[in-house]
Length: 320
Image (cartoon, rainbow, N blue to C red; front, top):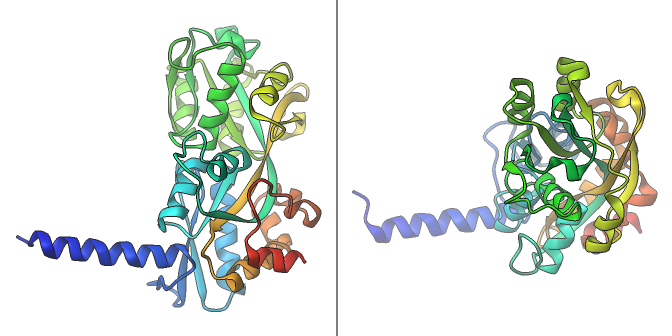
């Protein structure tokens, strides 16, 4: 049996290596050579995962000495935690969750050492319910079986805030289940769930699967009435948006709430690598657009608008 002293030494070595990797350090890849970067994304049927895979491919092609892998995660909160701990090098996150991280609020007990590479596209809040559940507004979710997204995800943060803004206690007034998007979609199809909340880019393949498979048996819940309370409670990070009918083939556009996405890293990342990541987003944007249409909404004009999350010094150098 390995001694306790030996075990502690091994753990210390592993932790030190992980911290270096989280700062763009010496994580060697077993395939392709070079330093391997881990990209924390989200559920496998969400945009983060798809776009993260495209970003990983472009890193391997265009940043000398680096390879990258997109990792499926619970998304925003977990992603930031992974970057801070050195378990991931790059992460997708919603801006409201990142703002909590910088301020040491919400799921975070103190300010987190993250920096932004760029603001990306906007996430659209999706609330869908089975037609037989009779849900026409967020307040109508009272007493319903609702998936609020994966634990420690940006979706969960928004879902709980939406429910509270409608005057509902998320732990008492709904039968809340913290499920991944694939589990959630199956739950609505099976009838074990009445409704879901999801925050993602357009279109999200899991939502496409749901509306295609269920047809008129599922519908979107408009969120324009929820926005004022959300902004009063949580600020201007939330904005009005529209899910166009072409996104999912709905009869009409759906008013919703949008929040930006950010690409973030540990503040200790090598500035040269951070600068290369920022440049990659725009030098090879057309390749990312081929992976997912949401990349079309990444613009240089908006990319540096990451407040209150500071830009990494390397990214700031790129944007000038």
